[in-house]
Image 1: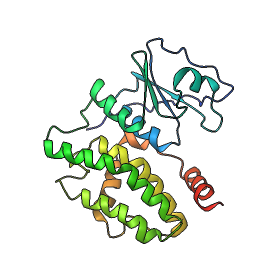
Image 2: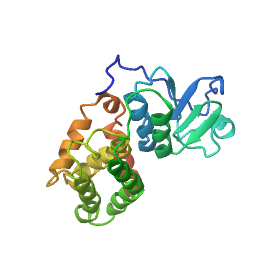
Image 3: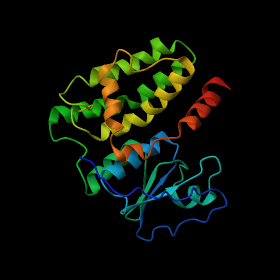
Length: 235
């Protein structure tokens, strides 16, 4: 099950020359960036729960941020951040939980206690997962990053179904923005297919790519590869 709707017209990116929106006027706003994997987690969750009309996207240019964003919205000066009920909430994993708990739409965590427990384990591993893969870019990618992808392959075998908890959940949304980028970059630069020998991972990516709520948020592949080359290879 996922929401099917007319494709959303994305608002323009706000930079240092942009005026702030009318803050704390009762509008719920998701401050985001179209290329940021952390923000993408929350964007996918918003879309899947069908909240496009309830939560307005406010994209921020992270390379040329408006001063008002730090001063008036979120002192941390990063995305994502959610303006809701006259407060600002940050941190992507906290926000996907918050959207699931406080807004209408399909529930994104199961009632099953075993699955809930595994969800917490998987969410706790997200930072280790990404750091392991990032660090592999200066070493043996196949061996070092392989540990992280093997973890996902193993996790996908725990419950019956195509997703990390069996059925689709916010845990899948927490991982896919990073897997999306790693798959592109590792294939392009190291000529290594992360799904090779990992059939569950291959199917998981394939199934997520059938979900509109996710596919409309995907980053531009050329941008991802160019950014990663600059950041990790100095090219």
